[in-house]
Amino acid sequence: MIRHVDGDIRDAQQVQKVFNEFKPEVLFHLAAQAIVRVSYQEPKRTFDTNVGGSLNILEAVRLSDSLKAVVYITSDKCYRNNEWVWGYRENDTLGGRDPYSASKAAAEMVFAAYLDSFFLSKKDLGLASARAGNVIGGGDWAQDRIVPDCIRSLKKGTSILIRNPSSTRPWQHVLEPLSGYLTLATKLLEDPKKFSGSYNFGPKTQSIKTVRELVDQLILEWGHGELQVSTEANAVHEAGLLHLNCDKANQLLGWHPLWDFDRTIVETVKWYKQVLDGRSALSITKQQINSYMGEKK
Image (tube, rainbow, N blue to C red; front, side, top):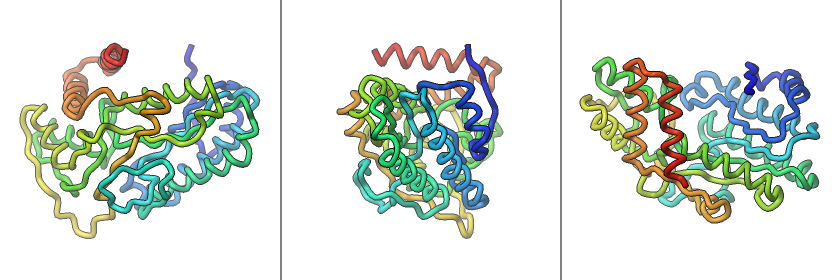
């Protein structure tokens, strides 16, 4: 049985109440204010959620006597971006020029402090932070996110406006990092201390594409559409070149991405087309999960 509880991780008392009631053994922390441009409009809410809210989660973990594994999700944008052509490793410097990236770097620093100060002494508790590349796939309808914005434009028959066509990102289907998080939790249960730490989850090098390449491929798979580069004045800063090195997850966890860039686009467009045609989002999602898991074996 699944019980769903709506809440706000900024409310420490509510977080603690839920922990006390459910006494979880495995925790996946994914709650966040996750939009870069929103972080410029609402920087305090972004920091309150991504740093303060994450701190509330870690406090509840510290006081818990039931937990055995914690997977704490941040972002690939937690790294100080030097526009390197090679991928960032888990021990590279953290940082961020925009409020969102800085909040994720700060959340990682809070995690590291709690891990060293409180959790390493708990022999039966494993904790790891996970930093995923740019996730796309069905179910995302947020504003100011590239794929949902493209789908809305394609559906209306209007031009797709993109701000940074030459920016590169490690695009991956949402099922890829999710499989990584589940693998990581399983390993933490098997050997808490061996697998505690931080991990990158991203695609193979061939799936690191520019924004223009992503949009062109979406248009091709949709069947029609038009791209237009935005000339927005005073545009906010966003990273231009961003890659991840996932050797640690590949070698230590045995995790590897399954779907390449082309397959990721096919499955993403298929999900949106079918939902917009009236099919059940749940059934389509289940089909894609079953297909992915069948190929993963």
